[in-house]
Amino acid sequence: MESRSPHFDAALQVIQRLQATGCEAYLAGGCVRDLLLGRAPSDYDVATSATPDVVLGLFDRTFAVGAHFGVVLVAHDEGDSYFTTEVATFRSDGAYSDGRHPDAVRYTTSAEEDVRRRDFTINGLLLDAERAADSLTNPAELRAAVIDFVGGLADLEAGVIRAIGQPAARFEEDRLRMLRAVRFAARLGFELEPATAAAIRALAPRIASVSRERVRDELTRMLTEGHARRAFELLDETGLLAQVLPEIARMKGVDQPPQYHPEGDVWVHTLGLLAQLEAGCSMTLAWGALLHDVGKPPTFRRAPDRIRFDGHVEVGVAMAAEICRRFRFSNDETRQILALVENHMRFADTGRMKSSTLKRFLRLDRFDEHLALHRMDCLAGSGNLDHWEFVRSRRDAMPEEIVRPAPLITGRELIAAGYAPGPLFKQILHAVEDAQLDGAIHTPAEALLLVKERFA
Image (cartoon, rainbow, N blue to C red; front, side):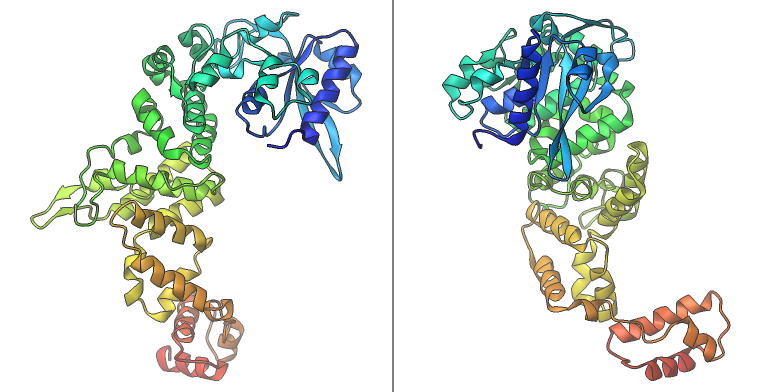
């Protein structure tokens, strides 16, 4: 990690200006945690005794995005764009009737009181930024600049996710914190502290009160931060998986034919795919990997010859569509996730495909994701990459103009040839393109001759 960044310096300037008015101000939350772990924070948050009106009056460009909760964004120029530092007033929260927001917020001048209403000890650390400014790469000096009211330093060192205070109370305040606990544990390679894990198991059904969008976003982060397998193992262990994705929980214990899946049941196989998802992968690929075999549990049957999952792709597409609807994915996201589920078994047929069929397969939107999913699918099972190698080599050998050639004729030429516009046009043009992709015709004249022969 670099010793200093423009975002750190901007936050330090905010802190120095607040301190010049006699207010307390510290770096707080995830940025402190990440600095202590030697990771580059994605942003820097400031906690201060200054009230929002004071913050708004001190800086020229501000956004009162959460002034009711004491949160103000201070904007900083960065070339043609800008970034922001979040500045939050020390506060004490009232009851959380909706399981997300406090019914009332009381500002306080006590940094400790502010910390004790936060979620986890490792996120409850404050940092004297000015003291730490020249020692960001020196762990001992950095620790000396930390203010720790909740034992967060010890938990960081021990690799533990522990709720501040009473775990059940923290989770009742904001039930999404149960998912966040799992995500932090997976991402950091930490363990859930026993009392914290027990509270999650006891309160897991309460996650149903959290908005689907917030749950979706938290699950997407788990899938795309590079530790998806561990995250979903923890979701299962805490009882959260059965609450948020019961379709995935039902994969457990669903046997597969050992000759194709020596790794084990559908759940084990799916975990094998999740283990291969890299940090920063696309969310559609990640969800496609999670859902590609979601249709297997309801289609499982033991036939005389072997275990079968007849129609699992079609059933899986329907189930994935319902999951996407439930979590309110965008139309574009849903379309790609469903395409990944629908086409993940087609690689086995590519060696027998006509040239036109193969080229249409290669034309699928974001085909690299289809390739990536198939490779993960193979590596999580038999390990045989023959179909993947075949498709990749064919894709690489075919330039774009071969896979997507310019059409030889259009509807205009069909009208000129005496055909009336209508539903038949699509069938005719598809037949012409098939012949063109197969290499049977090459010119507009040959295309029109084919039309006259087949569609007299």
